[in-house]
Amino acid sequence: MSSLTAIDHVGIAVDDLEAAVEHYRRTLGVKPILRERVADQGVEEVLFAAGNSYIQLLGALAPDTPVGRFLTTNGPGIHHVAYRVTDIASTLDQLRREQVRLIDDVPRRGSRNTLIAFVHPKSMGGVLVELVQEG
Ligand code: CO
Image (cartoon, rainbow, N blue to C red; front, side, top):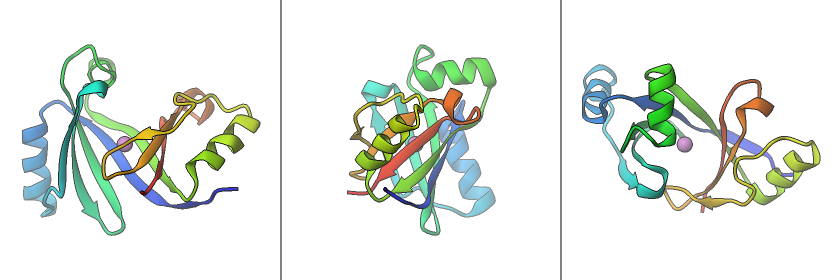
């Protein structure tokens, strides 16, 4: 079975990405280490390092995207928690065996050359969970 090795990141939905980046810089003294626009997910993300983990700010590219809909419904705030795993395929197999509802049946490419898969919040106590395997 695959093991969890870290909280990879916490994904935080923000209304205004530039303002949020500036706020994190000013208040926490952190500098963005990566900025990436993921057009097929309708999102632009900025990563800050926090030790061996990351803070991921998520801005929506349009209202009718997953993060855009989240912002409309909930306002800004924590969007998902990402767990780092050693073998994402075996973690997904384990979740399937336990009848956990998956959003991604097959891992896909994330930022930082990672493989990622989302797990449905209905199966995880209301928390949208992302699995991350580093490349
Ligand atoms: Co994420």
